Length: 440
Ligand SMILES: Cc1ncc(COP(=O)(O)O)c(C=O)c1O
Image 1 (cartoon, rainbow, N blue to C red):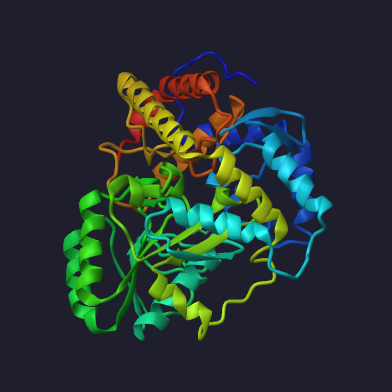
Image 2 (cartoon, rainbow, N blue to C red):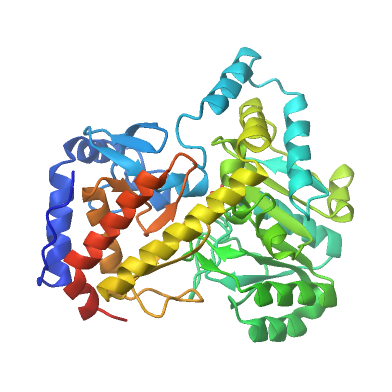
């Protein structure tokens, strides 16, 4: 599935997209048929919004290491990395062994076990803010529980969130406007990386401010890193007002042994985790200062049938105890930094307005220069270029998030990164005129 030789295409974006969609659909009849059948029983033929795109999403049949095969038999280099949850690839044998062993011991035991103590201890040892933690089934739940903990601890109601922030489907804060699915809690929004606005807002709501919640890198908001001085300002504002500072490290925890908090030396009061930490099983965790978490000893209920399910606890223990060591985290971070620099150099050389922002092994493509330092509403032209980029990468046999996000998994090696750099170079070359014509 190599791309055709570079050819400068003069057609306008609409035509290019139409051609790309047709070529995409033509070689995926089985994915198309599954989508049609699925639509009879699931709205949109889907049960996870992020996987919905037109004309229909590619259905995968199986995966191995960092490779995927779709229903129609095409193979891909997997750079989506399950939106950061797939850190270990698809066939890490130690995780498989841990899961098989857990199965041997029986599932759904309805009791406490050794697995959760092991994983909790591993995480409390690694993340500076985690004195105590509890498990959930997802990052969304972890954030909901962290907000509950902050409200209970402070006896206050208001939470400061970032425009462009994402803490789960029911905790989504668009750059402008609102999201129907977001829970109707008393949120006040501020601009990301804007210390002045955050300071003004904290002053205005000081007496009722229960929590400030922030992603140290906006993940779904475009892999835009927080400036260290912004996070330091939030730390100071929380101290001043008595609010609980929560770092949502669901994505960024992979950037070092102890996440961004360890990398920058800024310790929040609470941290939420998710994604890869359960070794690829459903996972979430929230935790922090012992005095805040002590509520869960007594007054604050925290339920969840699958909170300590043996599969997640077993896989997570091996994942964090044996595979994703501090050294492995640092090496992955550095590999991602190098890859992003190479991609941006390719775009610079081609003199096109394309570039990647991110932290370590997570990055997202943007079609504007200079690269953004805060989230933005994409223009329809940028949306078109993003879609074209996705289809061109699919044509090159590279699977990434439809929104142009890449999350490296551990099995991704030098050869795979070379291949991606070459594909992006080819995109920059073959689509140069379209890219330049649509500079934002
Ligand atoms: C920063 C952040 N927080 C929370 C979540 C929600 O996690 P989950 O999908 O496990 O509910 C996500 C998921 O993408 C995320 O990126």
